[in-house]
Length: 265
Image (cartoon, rainbow, N blue to C red):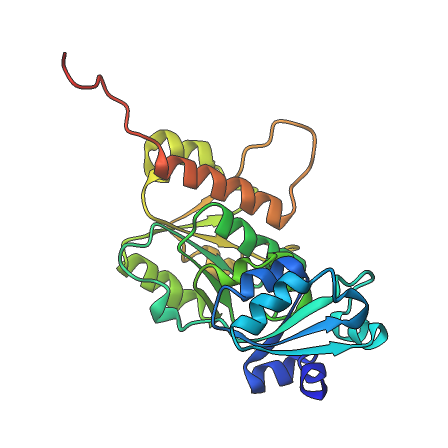
């Protein structure tokens, strides 16, 4: 239990290369991988989570029951779900992420809000992205709020952390991906890319800081800045909402059947 408490601190997560995944969905997804070291359950929630405890036991994973007050300290949420897993770090080297054949990759640049990072990872997973990259000056991938917001998606696709943006963009181009930066003020829209056919090609999307967008030096490195057209009166969308819309549009374009007259009868 003492070692699990240490994982509430970033420096200890980094030193131990472990993190906590709290909640039924996160633990369910984690148990389908080889990353889980131990599972802890609130002793008042044993019956509710017996199915997951059985899965862990069959896999030979250590189990621990703790008092509700102790569990709440580990979970760090107002209404804990009563189960969490101690997991090994899941991130992989950037060189194993940007490989030839990738068609949709996400780069989070200076994303500081853990909920936003987790939600972007969830969106990337939902829309079939091949990988997610997280820049050196973004929030910790293993922040408990990031892990919760990803709802288990961080176990589903390769994620690289500590990424240098310039290096990542160069590697993306070498792997055959166009590089586009999301920018609410850009003249080129995602619809323009779609009409030209560019949206159906392999793409790396760069999503910048919640408050300031892409840094000027990074905006200058992408192939093009792209906006999401808005037709109502809202001034802007938050980062994760805009990312969801852009990734959905890209995934749809990349999977669209080519039009044509069809085979002759």
